Image 1 (spheres, rainbow, N blue to C red):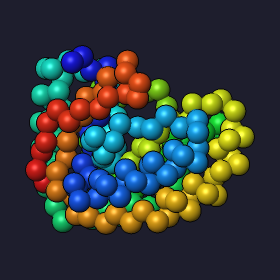
Image 2: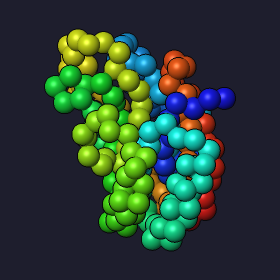
Image 3: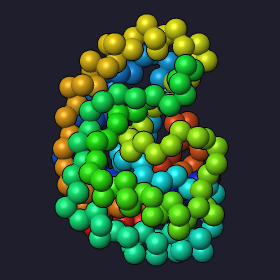
Length: 187
């Protein structure tokens, strides 16, 4: 499979996948213009990379391994709804509340891997689990159902210790885009 981009993420433990999938389905039945994200590999996005060759991935993995120990014992809590795109929401997610060590990890990785960074957004670092893309350019559907969606997602209660970091490959040519776990690094 050819990947159009890659990213670093924290995989969601298997015991929470069903709850996350159920919430995503409930949101999808409320927001009919939501293109659900591929839930085969639910994860918290930590650092998005641009297109990478296999040789570049070796450098990325080496940097992640250098800094991974600072995440030992870190916890993640999931629950609050968020959107990227401001007044024209494009991406729906649940935000991950994390310890300071995750932000420090992100900052250090950002410096070391800046040459691989995708520069297609200026959202800043928001640890999150993507639920889906809002397909409609009209925001009325999302705004009309925003409170209902928020209530659904407030019921999601995931709290876990960071166990592994993963490198994911993304094939954006597929709809929904296909995300595959390429490599796992135990914390």
